[in-house]
Amino acid sequence: MQPRGHHIAEFNIGVLRYDWDDPRVKDFADNIDRVNAIAARSPGFVWRLSDADMEAAQTAADGPLGGNPRTASTLSVWEDIESLERFVWQTVHKQFYDRKDEWYAPQGLRMVLWWVPEGHRPTVEEAKARFDHLAAHGDSDHAFGWAHASGARLWKSEQCGVAA
Image (cartoon, rainbow, N blue to C red; front, side, top):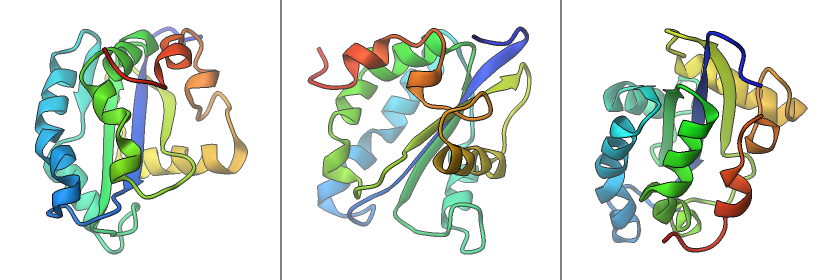
């Protein structure tokens, strides 16, 4: 259940199979701005870490994300889990999600969710710590995935298959 006075933070991370300028990831790379613009216009969207700040976090050799130049990640805040779900599963984002295996190297955990006080803007360090906590301990109120998110329903029916 969403705590009163809180929003939902979302952090996802993956490593691309190929370099950013490789033709095999062109469709993904060419549509990042489009998908981010749709997110920003979506009901319930609050904030997203800027491209420049995220790129710096992704590529810093001594940074929290390890400095792999193929890293692709997003850190955002939404009013509630339902708003985030609608964006993820009921917009063009879903079409790109369905193709993730074309672009991303195999990995286990890709995303973490957690509650943040309204007005709080999480850092990449905070996001990575929540991600690591989820990987080490599983779902908890501290860090969780879709299955633990009270109110999340669409992920059950929409995460597989082709987007309309």
